[in-house]
Amino acid sequence: MRKNIVAGNWKMNTTVQEGVALAKEIDAALAGVTPKCDVIIATPFTHLVSVVNAIDTNRIGVGAENCADKTEGAFTGEVSAKMVASTGAKYVILGHSERRAYYHETPEILKEKVLLALANGLTPIFCIGEVLEEREVGKHFEVVKAQVEGSLFNLSAEDFGKIILAYEPVWAIGTGKTATADQAEEIHAFIRKTIADKYGKEVAENTSILYGGSCKPSNAPELFAKPDVDGGLIGGAALKADSFMGIITAF
Ligand code: 13P
Image 1 (cartoon, rainbow, N blue to C red):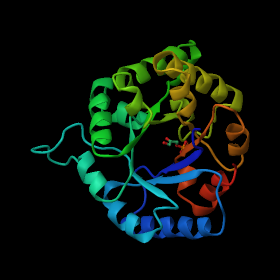
Image 2 (cartoon, rainbow, N blue to C red):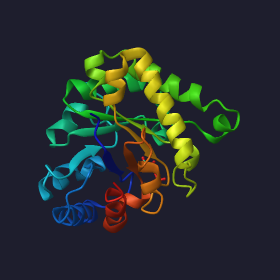
Image 3 (tube, helix red, strand yellow):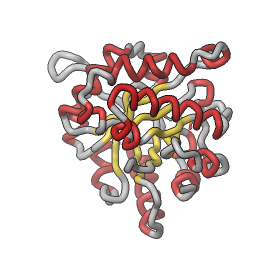
């Protein structure tokens, strides 16, 4: 059966020293509880080695927030999936709406990144989600379907089975405006059906689909209670150990 997962996306926040301190604080807090979900933190590239070495990686999986769409070579400033894997990180967030919007990452580019992540043994946390104007005209179903099809449906069923999906409505990210639990469930169920239509019911049932967008301790219990919401991808509330723990213990 699919896993429940709470993953933090630190985005471009914290120095290495602050990040290590935060990771240690979360690690220590988790030592005292048996969470009913897997816990992942995705940090800036600069932090990965230090964070991996500072915590118990059996307790917390570590991930990057991006990787290159090229294998290696003359791509100044890029960080490859192989480099990410060599830090001890096991996950990589791909297709975050901020990368799509600000760095012009297209479905084709993301397709390459997913393939390279998988080839290097990383688990992609693949983000999808519509902008406000798309939801307002009722296009959100077709938008997320196209995002999944455009970057993931080239994969074999075996490889698709390694993907974690995160539905993040762009209008809910960092805005304090959360999708209601019913809105989240409706589209998560649709995403699962889209997967089932392509890869069959078993693959769909085994795929973890996380919700992201202003998720916090107060709304996590209601969201996570929905059958097709398998956890959260957390931005702002992942930057403080107590609020991140409050979401983890919502399961
Ligand atoms: P917030 O939780 O800050 O809304 O961010 C969500 C997000 O983008 C996680 O990837």
